[in-house]
Length: 225
Image 1 (cartoon, one colour):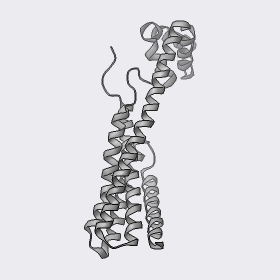
Image 2 (cartoon, rainbow, N blue to C red; image 1 turned 120 degrees about the vertical axis):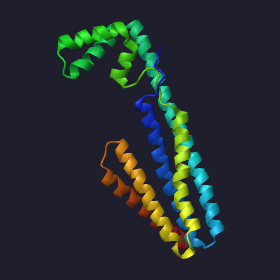
Image 3 (tube, rainbow, N blue to C red; image 1 turned 135 degrees about the vertical axis):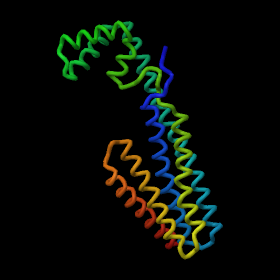
Image 4 (cartoon, helix red, strand yellow; image 1 turned 30 degrees about the vertical axis):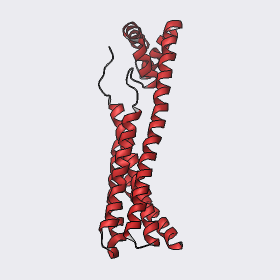
């Protein structure tokens, strides 16, 4: 019987989709807000433009995640079928792959051979999938969870600069939006660094710089028109 519990890899994939969606939502919405805000002071126009972009961005991110993760899940199912056939047709080749994996980890030839023999008797399919592809049998990346995570987080991320632009007094709207954007992208930078075991400080600074560049470019475009 396959384990029905969600694996850590599946959970991380959902969180990853959310972090990427949030970052994209922040940057695309703030770009529209600054380009439109530079061209007009009409708060209703700015609000409608921001809302339209927020909805488009959230749906785009969700559909993109669904398509991408579905393709990955399909690829994982293909290798399952491939290895099932290989176990039936050429089990010695499968056992050799398992042996090679453990021998390359530093185990002696005798120990690696014993482990490969034992695993081939107990669960050859799950073993070869794990050692060769890092795939857990029965646990495929979920396109729906990634899509909903991206949809929700993109909408939430884009909402922060939008509400700052709309609620702040006219003379402070740009500063308030910049502040909201800096805080939001700093948080996504921190989360992405934690997920990827990277450097939080670098990720935060990088995201803030990208956010400021995005604001500057779109503000300039709005001023041109």
